[in-house]
Amino acid sequence: MKAALNEPVTSDLRERIVTKLLEWYLQNKRDLPWRGASAYGVWVSEIMLQQTQVATVIPYYLRFMERFPTVRALAEASQEEVLRYWAGLGYYARARNLHQAAKILVERYGGELPTEPGAIESLPGVGRYTAGAIRSIAFHQPYPLVDANVARVLSRLFGVSGNLRSTSTQARLWNLAQQLVPENEPGTFNQALMELGSLVCIPSDPRCEQCPLLADCVAGNAPDPTAWPEASSNKRSLPVVHSSALICNEEGALLIVQRPPHGLWGGLWEFPRVVCSAGETPLEGAHRAALEVAGWEVTAMEPKTLRAVQGQVAPITRIKHGVMHYRITLYGYLMRPKAPVAPKEERPKEWVTPEALSRYPMPAPQAQLREAVLNRLHAPLPNIQPCFVFEETNSPDYAKES
Image (cartoon, rainbow, N blue to C red; front, side):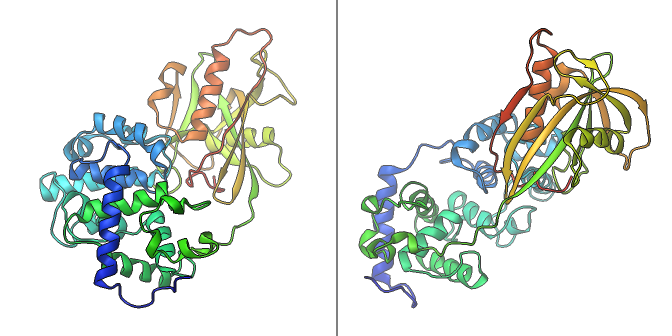
């Protein structure tokens, strides 16, 4: 079994790793739309790829770049339009930071990403990893990067123990990445490291027999390669119930409210929603959402007949999804407005026709509510059953707080 490396990387080892990895990458790299892109395209792709899988990002990236092909085009767009093109990717602070950074680039750098040290890192939403990606891939500067894939590769290759999120382990991984990144083709090398982590050095059942670095890998020559990196402790999932009031007036328009500009879902639109309290039924929660968030007294509507009734009614939809350590069930109830009241807090509100709803950017679970209510309102009345949608989502923005 190979011993873990605790000293600087030797020049011979570095040369072997760089040579073998680049050869492997040229033969096995995926054809991705941001390969060979401009500095702007690299930046957009790296922001989108944070905490999001490649397959998910591709269609969003293509659509985003078609609408905002340059930094200036992005800067001149409204935040609402940017969020609409981002809707469904989650982590919406990324879109807001990207938009704000584009404005800064236009004001200070003529719409170009700067190459001087420290300038990229000063942009909103650009940390050490993203800066390393832009500098190495777009500007061919020998900057390292460490994302989740690279951290796993380096941990196994050099036998780095410890929790990958700890400060000391992160410092060691960045030090190793800095020692490895070559002067020539630094961006290609960094992309090769990430690609190896995506395709070969995967979290479970790593494909060690396909790895070009197997001969020098500590984990690959150990009885259990998955012993690295150290497993993080999993928090127990907590069940949470959310309820939304789908308030539809006599003209068929639906009421939506806008989230505050910062924080959870900042700037996005949603149907009035609350987190149900202990002992509160989803229907009671929907009534509270109508009162406290929308500012309306309402009567629930039976989804089969679309008639306003007193008492218990079925939800028009129920959406299950997981976020971080929460298991969330979101209920949606059709409501008919009766009389306006003072809400707990004032938010921008809009009565929107069903045809215009798609113009308002919504988080993924709320977009599912939108589709469910549109399907119901456009469906023939007889023999209609409530629509039940079950979907897992990885967006961390849909957290417990309302």
